[in-house]
Length: 608
Ligand code: ARG
Image (cartoon, rainbow, N blue to C red; front, side, top):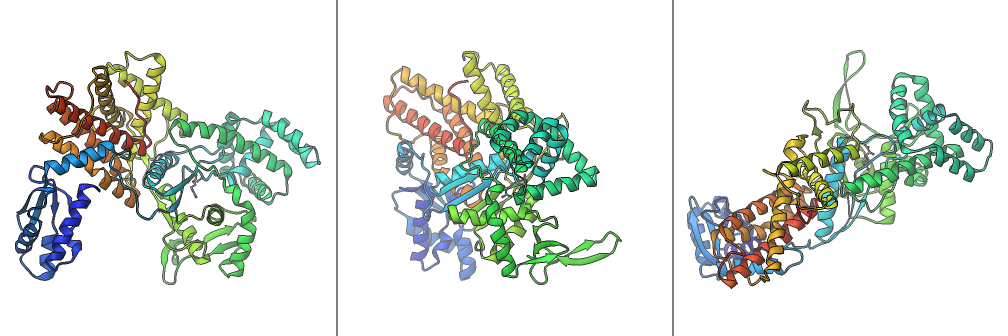
């Protein structure tokens, strides 16, 4: 049995066909008026328009064709020719039982599975994270889980930023900052033993040091051209592999950052399958550039090498320093090799496509990256298509808006800018502890259980607040609202899940067993219909690459459960069969709610 919407859709489509009308008019959706119907079909209006006929007449034909179908309790015409469908109790009960028995909680699989690589998170060595990275991690993780759950073969890659200008900056800064580091570098430059040097650097360089050095170096590079040139030169020497000492320093920077980042991401419930770095494609860049040149795609431009990606006629207006305005090609060309000879951000992205093709051969690569990088991806994708490294449609930028502070600008922490994932998680956790105390929750937990619950509530607050908006929309960081146990929040959903868990626990203690679900009461109907709607929510989220559809479903499900529980006593029902049915309905609701939350990357605690 598939979901009811699909099953009914097929029946209604067949009815349209039986009247000699195109099947696609038989699309069925959940009803806008649950008081009147469970599902509706608006196709008679569209069919009437194209066939120049009366919509009510077509609707009447459909109603006749559907009359007597056992899965329908009623089928009626409303208004101008809408068809209202109500499912029979028997069909709804059967579907609810099926969901109750299904480990996938009623969710289907995609028909044609694909290999999908999801590029998300995108942290950098030493360079501090900003809200773009936070959102990329939260959204990307959810999309990864959803695609995998739908049956695709999915790999998530952090695409670690370890090869850009910031590496040259850090090299220069570390050498200037610390005489011991400088002497290790000199030692290697004079041919000293690299193993020994590597060990010495491991002791000299740690993450707090990088955190301290990077902002200083970045600031100085902005103000001081000579310093900037040194950093550029260091970047080029690092990438060329001509200075063993720089490679050693770089290795140490990468190791120190990665260890800390992996831990922080894990705390956020974000785990990457791959931590490939931009540097991993280094060996592919030389041959790739040669090939791009040979194909006539990479061309010299003021000492650099670029790929022009704008098509004829695609231009934008550009203001020159002297105030005059000229038409220039748009999008801008992709910078492949800088005038210093360095590979650029887009170069590594292009080569990474080749690497991914070689190692995983994905049908689809999704780049879950800040919308502010839309132009960059447009350039890279076009260059890849021109070079034949991918076919149109195979690369997709899943952009998103920003999480803003109260000033409407991308959120920054109070201390002045740097978003530390750890600090943010700790902020959410602290607020969650406060909220739990306020609500009188968690008092029966051991200190360890309480901490675990507070952590999960905090993460749920952050993630749900993010994922409940369509990803394209920006939103305001408001921890008070995010952590509230009321309203459309993560903590509210966890609280509802916990309630069901405690009912199930009590049922076990009282030896109440689940039984066959029989749908009778209106609140049971609504709950069963929502359980059925999971599949629609997932396929919508999948097609639009938008987890907010899952978030919406989870919220509606929790609300429907809450109304059901208020209207229909479970353990208090006096009839054994009713008790068993309602308990099974509660259990199925919990299973689906936890499944939906899991797809959002949110874990539920056992108790509160
Ligand atoms: N490291 C980049 C940044 O901080 C994000 C990487 C996104 N992924 C990519 N394939 N470019 O902006």
